[in-house]
Length: 237
Image 1 (spheres, helix red, strand yellow):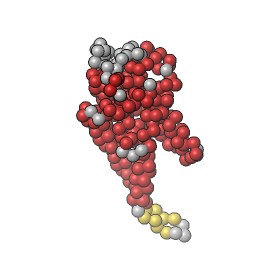
Image 2 (cartoon, helix red, strand yellow):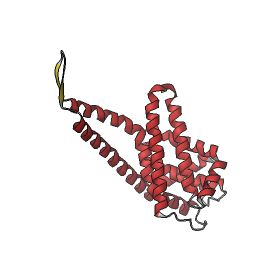
Image 3 (cartoon, rainbow, N blue to C red):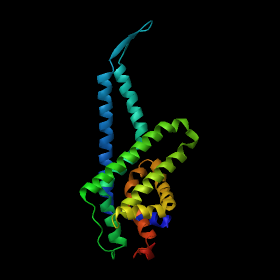
Image 4 (cartoon, one colour):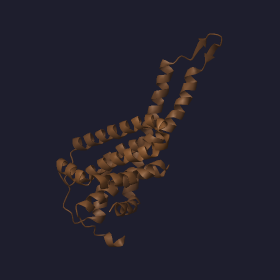
C-alpha cells in the first residue's frame, strides 16, 4: 500500500503542474533562509563591537566580520536540516493543487471535495510550519549529543510529523476535521511508516527539494487506499 502510493506519486511528480509547485516552494524557502542570514549578520553588526582589547594580548579587531563568517557556516549547516521543513510549510499553501492534480488523474469519478476556507488553510499551514520547524530546531540541538542515533531520530521525528500532517491534510479535503483525525488514529502506524519513507530523501541534496510535493501526492494516494477508493489507472502500474 505504502510503496504503491509512492510509485504513483513519483509519476505524478513529473507532471508540469507539480514541478511548478516545487519551484515556488523552493524559491520561497531560499528567500526566507537568505533573509534569516541577512538578519543574523545585521544583528551581529549591531550587538558586537568591531574590536576590543584583552589584557596581555592587546586589541583584537574585525570581531563582527569573523562572527558573520562563522554564522554563514552555521546557517549552511542548519539549512541542511531546515530547508525541507521550511519548503514543506510553504508548499502547504499549494497542497490543494497537488491533491487535485492527483485526483483528476487517478480518481476522476469521486464527488467534489470539501473546500477549505482561506482561514482554515492558512491556519493549518502556519501550525504545520511552527510544529515541524520548531521540532527540527530542537532536534538540531540534540543531534551532537546522540551522534550514533541522530539518523534514527531524524527519520523517526520527521516520519511522525510529516506523516501525521500530510495524511490529515489529504483527508480533510474529503471529510470533516474530526473524522480525518479519527481515520489517522486508526492507521497511525501505516501513516508513520509512510512518513518515515518520505523522510529518507530529506538527507539527499537536490532530491530533498522534491519531498513536499512527493509527500502531498503520496499521502493523497494513501488516503484513498485506506478508504477503499479505486484508482482507475491502477492497471498501468
